[in-house]
Image (tube, rainbow, N blue to C red; front, side, top):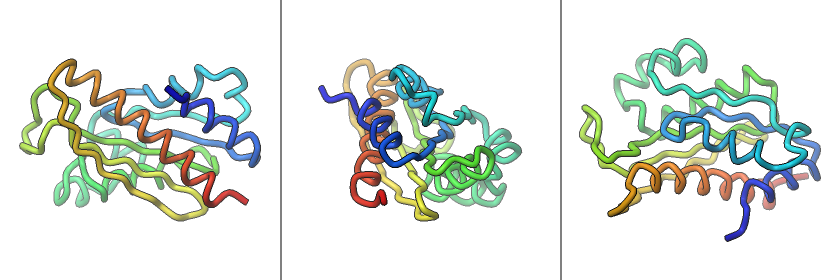
Length: 163
């Protein structure tokens, strides 16, 4: 399997860009995957694990109204998470993830495997929605899928839009 973290780090280096992360359901997995790559310190600024709504609001600047209306697992929330972590870090690219890892859902009754990913680059936010349906190792597979898809999205965006 292709190492999307290594590809992302190489693209970031090539374009002299820094990346930051705001993670919920992945719990820092994207940051780990990036920092597993040798030389990632040239491109990785910081990662914030914002598992609770309180941290999403107080640290990342997600609006209370957004969480009340759309919930933590929503396109609107990951958009605000990606903008907030970009502002905190001063990086060029941010990736934000929130989802239902499982194996059971939360109080919102959103389906297990629902994940939203946002990548913010050049003030343009691209959002991807996943609807995973794993039968085994549900939590681990949902988290790994979300992290890998997030890094693939970063690669796609940098390949298509980098200067």
